[in-house]
Length: 382
Image (cartoon, rainbow, N blue to C red; front, side, top):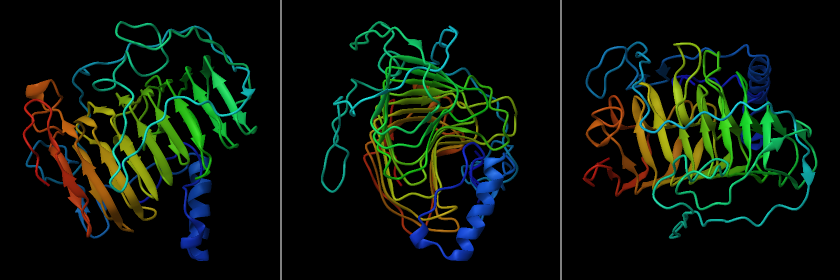
């Protein structure tokens, strides 16, 4: 999606707003936006930030890291490690069995003084994310997918979808749902939608493929919008990959190759415009375009608060990482132990992102420590 917008993606319905913090007039406005989004009537985005003008890293011409202007080209070099496309065996819907939430591997997310426990060696890639296919180096048990024949709207709490090949959009309307060891393929629509902050949705060891068929103007996020944890997910091939508006954790996952059928999309791998809890932990995030980001945190439609971005490998975008005030404020963030790829170390662009590694423009900046170049370990200052 275009990060310069005060609107939301058009993929999956109304934006998430904490009702307690919104006036009746603002909530009414949200309803109008929701209706437009639900019908696909709101996709265009503006290229400026209220009070700041154009967002840096969004320019048609290569220039200094603070350049502004029109949209950049979307030319893309070959992805450094693009995933093999999933086989095209015919999927239908699967039987979704109602069962307790599984006791799969968990991790401790970093909080006040906490340290995370990561579940993949090195960085996420094809062999240790997505459904286990028996690739060399994959220590997980190989899975043979079977067609999914269950409901596409999940209404039974504790439902587990395991080992399924799924075609189409899953709407999560129940708590404690788990999707694991599966593949979801969609075309020009969101793959998984959760709108309850407390849904406790888990998606594990699953591939999510937009098949590069996103025809929207703004970009459709494959996964959104709140109340979920992703672990060892391989997601790719839509205008945006992941949206966190509310509460979300993504860990040990490979999110890459955003794109669609048009040339006007502003691609983000992970985007948030309104959140109360964000954890982005030990992921590989790759955007082969000259815009917009690997991670965009911009408080367009509500405040963003309580953010930890730790131990990720970021490659590409206009700037790889954005931290921005807009209509609201972004506060209380930690950006630690991340590595940025550049062309000399196998990345897309000489400066990490096309224009640089980070663009920070907020009244409260995040804690920034031990963020380095991946090729030589040199510190990158804030």
